[in-house]
Length: 587
Image 1 (cartoon, rainbow, N blue to C red):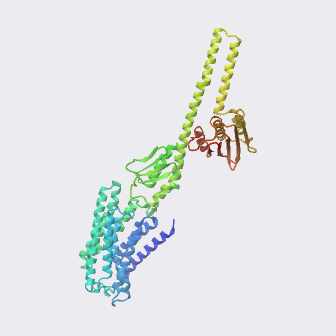
Image 2 (image 1 turned 60 degrees about the vertical axis):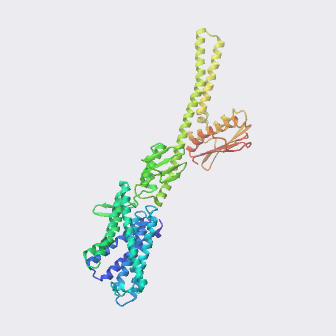
Image 3 (image 1 turned 90 degrees about the horizontal axis):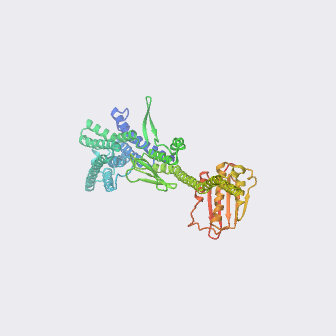
C-alpha cells in the first residue's frame, strides 16, 4: 500500500489534536480543571476516528472529511485560546488567533451538514442533494466571512483584544446580518439532513436501519447541543452550556465509531481477548485467502460445482446479496437469492461475474479490485467447465459411434455367420459352404481388429507413438512421409499423451484424404523445449478459415487442451492445410 495517505492522515490528525490540546490548556492554564480535560478528551474523538478510517481506507473520502472537520475544530480551539489571552489590543496573538478562531464556523457547517449527509462512504445519497450541498456551502462561506470580518465591538464583548480584521459601519452590520442568515440556513439544511436520514432509515432494509439509527442519534446530539449552547450561552458556567458543548463535540465521532465497529462498515471491528480490547482491521479476506480456503474444496468437485463455490466466495468476500457466474452458453450459477438488477459486472474468461447490491453501503474501489482479481481464477474455472462439458459430449459421441459401428458391422456379420452355421448343420453343408463361412469369420475378425484399432490401436500400446503413426500411414493410397526427431522412436510417454497426438494425426490424415483431395501428406514428430509436437501438412485444396468449422478436430482440440497443450490449424484456399498440435512433457 502507498505510505503517503497514511502519513498524510497521521499528520492531519496530529495537527488537529495539537490544536485541541494546546487550545484547551492555553485557555485555562495549568493545572487545568477536570472539565477542561474532559472537553479535550471529547474533542479528540473526531481526529482519532478520522485518522483510523483515512489511514485504513484511504480511497474512502469520508475519513478525510472527518479529518478536515477535526482540523477546523483544532484551529478554532487554538485560535480562540490565543484571542482570550490577548489583552493589549490588536496584538500578535489576535492577528494569529482571529483567522484561526473563524474555523469554528467551518467545523459547525461540516458537523451539521456534510459529515452526516455523506456517511459512510463519502457519497451523496442521491443527485437531488446537489442543490442542498451548494446552498449549504454558500451559507457556510458567508457565515465564516462574517465571523472573520465582524466589527471590533462585537469581538470586544468576549475577546479583550477585539478583531483587527473587523469591518465597521453599515458594511459591518450588513455583514453580520448576512452571517446570521448564513448560520440559520446552514442549521436548517442540517435539519433537512436529519429528516433525510429518518426517511432513508424508514425505506432501508432491516440490516441497514441500525447504522442510520446511530447517525440520526449523532445529528440530534449535535444540533441539540448547539441549541443548548445558544439558549444558555449568556449564563456563564451553566450546566446546559457544558452539556451542549459536550454533545456538539462528541455526538458525531461517538456514533460514527459505534457504527463502524458495531456493524463492520469499513472492515474494522473491536475484538476482545481475555480482559483486553483490540482492533481488527481488514476483515474482508484477500483473493489469496479466499482461494487458499477454497482450494481443497475445489479439487474435490466437478467444474460446475466449482463455479457455485466461487460465486459463493464472491458473495462472501464482497458482502453482496447475491453473486452469479455466467458461462458463455448462458448457463448461470447463482449464490444467494437473485433479486433486482446487477450493480457490478466484470468479464471473466469466456463468461462474466455479476453482483447484486452490497448488504451495507456501496461498492468501493477496493471492492472492484477484489472482484477483478477474482475474475482470473473464475475465468479459468469457466474455461474448465466448458472444456469438461465438451469432453463429456465428445466421449458420448464416440461411445455412440462405436455402438453404431458394432451394430451395423460386426454384429450383423456375426448374426449372418451364426445363421450360416445353423443352416449348414441343418442341411449338411459341404466343403464349399464351410469355406465360405470361414472367410466370413475371418472378415468379421478383421473388422473387429479395425474397430479396436480405432478405439486404441495395439501397436500404439506396444510400439509407441512413432511406430503407431508409421503403421497408420503405411496403408494410405497417397504418398506419405513420417519424420521423427532423434531418439523419439525409443521414447515412451503417458498413454493419454500418445493417444491424444495419435488420434489427432489420424483425424488430420482422414480430413486430408476425404475433404482436401491431397496427393501428398507429411507428418513430423518432434520433442523440444518441454513439448511433444505433431505437425501434419498436406498439398490439398485447403480451406477458408472464415467458413470452415472444426468438425472432428473439435473434440481432439479439447482433449489436447485438457493436457495443457494446444491445437492450431492454418491454411487457405489452394494453399493446403497445416495442423500443429503439442502437449507439454517432461524434458
